[in-house]
View 1 (tube, one colour):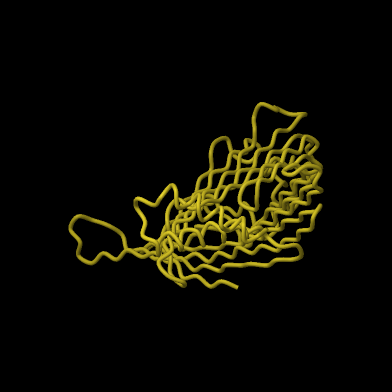
View 2 (cartoon, rainbow, N blue to C red):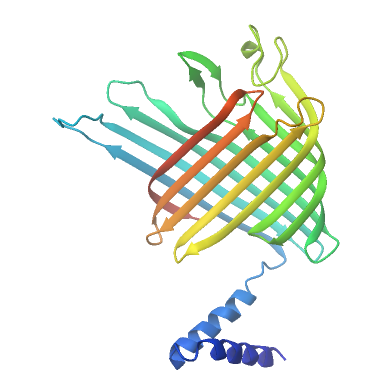
Length: 294
């Protein structure tokens, strides 16, 4: 039966491309179709990680048009550990990133500082629908400053979201989770709220609790050969305070592979959270990356 399916695939591919493809190319294309069909993740645990070092530099010496010499570097770790059975899916993604930039005659500054854990458990009830429960953790490694005043440091703030929901999952690269009963907790160190509120936590407190709805989406695809685009979207609305002011956290990653170890990487992230800042926060990085896959 399996051989018959392969033969039918061969005929279908041949009918659409016979005029353009030689016999050798046709066989290669058929093998690719079969490979894609069999790419479904097997049952059990799977683990995959990529560490990337991204570097940028600009050097000016007696350059009359003007410019400032600068150096920057970013280290990113993206690690997935997932479980799959006939009825259960448990996807876990850990992302860590840290970057610094140094402009001549200025103090060193951060360009990236992330510590994220996204966990999504699903119990299948149809082919693509699951009962779900999610847990998200977000924080940072290093201190942050604004006009010379420290405003944050390790594990301050910490953002935690969790709750039950419904998951639509076409495959590992395309899924949307809707959680209408989501708890959100914001934690900060007490010394950041001594003189006023911080990250939405009121003066004198160390925690803020919210209850609302969350929508989390993930989409990854190949734009063209050796060019991969990854989209991560998180939306949240607080039922009890300005539910129309939806918190947004969107990340776009584009990886343009040169070879096994080298790539050009572009990262863009925008955050809207009116409890932390009245406007959009954005960051953008682009450069040549050295990759290590494990």
